[in-house]
Amino acid sequence: CSLLSYVYLYFLLLDVVFIIIWLMLSSKWFLLSLAGILLRMSFIPLFFQVGGTDKVDDDDGQPMLKVMSFNAHGFRGSEMGDFTVKDSNMLEFIQILEEEQPDVLVLQEYVNRGDTVILSDRLGRMGYRHKISAEGRPFSGEIIFSKLPTVYADGWCDVDKFYADMLWNGDTVRIYCLHLDSYHLDQ
Image 1 (cartoon, rainbow, N blue to C red):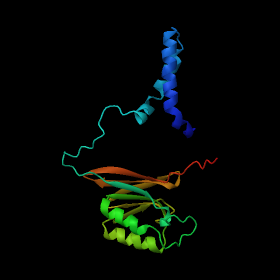
Image 2 (tube, rainbow, N blue to C red; image 1 turned 135 degrees about the horizontal axis):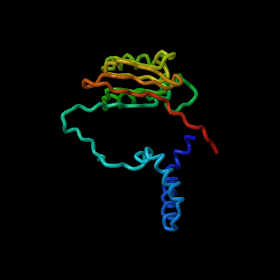
Image 3 (cartoon, one colour; image 1 turned 180 degrees about the horizontal axis):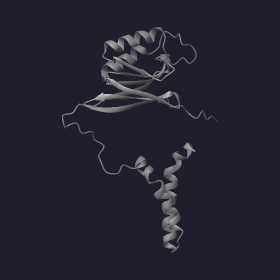
Image 4 (tube, rainbow, N blue to C red; image 1 turned 120 degrees about the vertical axis):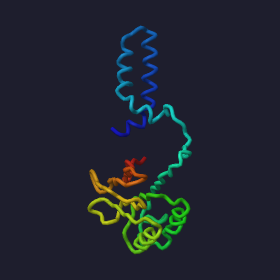
């Protein structure tokens, strides 16, 4: 069912064409297509920006919350099978992290082993004092490192999906951590 969302835009355009044809034929069938569009009106802003601008306005003096999400893939680099590969791309990741300085770091496929324990310590020294992971996985799998204090965290469905509420600028923001998995479609 979720695969149909990829073709929604085409169905919408087809529906509009049918509305035009049925209106030209003075047929009441246009109401059926119109009802279909109205039922799924909430999907339209996902494809077309309605109002607003594409520029981020930071002139109000408020600092911006910076969130970085990264599928660490166990920091294995390009090698798929072996978790003990020495060239793990972790140094490149730390360099990007130091350049970007996000307030919240969301990692997927984070593996708790020797070198990532060292990474965890280094992140702590960089100001990421809060670690949140899904229940049942002690800081392995999906994890959030945050410079912001956490007030609440909860998981749903399984251990690959959870969220955390954090205090930022006197307000509470919710950060979701989930591991997107493909449908594993092949030829």
